[in-house]
Length: 290
Ligand SMILES: [Zn+2]
Image (tube, rainbow, N blue to C red; front, side, top):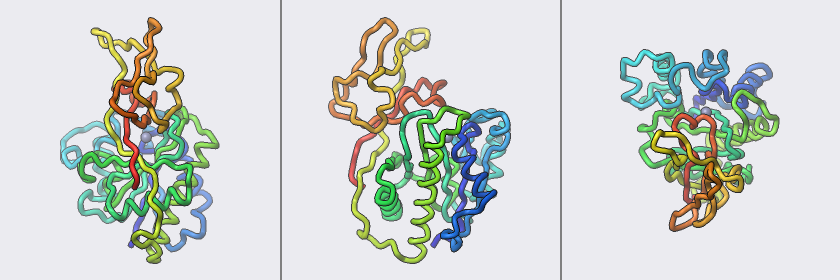
């Protein structure tokens, strides 16, 4: 049963669609069909919102490991994480049944639901979202156990992320906003159905999903400077198959660098602005049936 659900926006202060959805639901109320749910509406990092930045000192959405929460780190976000962990968690012994954390990306990922486990519950959730929102992408990041992630949503007994794009940082696009709203509502519809006992094993048809592979870095010179950019034919191709031999980078002296994997991959977070400092160009995934 979901007795307590936390909807969160503004974990990253310049990701406006989730922030605006929280603000609007605070102002106008949640749709009445969710009246049986106990949903709190939360803005995570007000200081980052104020400054219109992703974070003030450190990425808040990496602070929620057990080590991070126990550390003496005094950065603004490390301190904030401890407060939020008391509010939503505490992680591992949480008073919140479900944390839904809303993000957006500069990559053309459309509406993506990020699941951190592919167990029975999340399988049903993923299938339900795909059935009610066929344009959604279901991305599974289960390369490590749920509680080992540093994400804010892991303060809940269960936690997922909504990730919608492409939307520039600090900008609100109506199409991205509407996809965000739709996905949040479909997840809450699932919670209502789940509480009513309407979600039964094998009731929902299996669906396409993607499992995170690895991050691919931009090519760098010996001095650590980039020597290439995302190839024009690859830009905005999130979740489209990247086949061996297809170009992914164009070097600044005009040569193509191709994907040399032994099979196709499903790239996402292509040219994500927030990964600039990390020199991450995109992430790979494999397609599977959830
Ligand atoms: Zn984010």
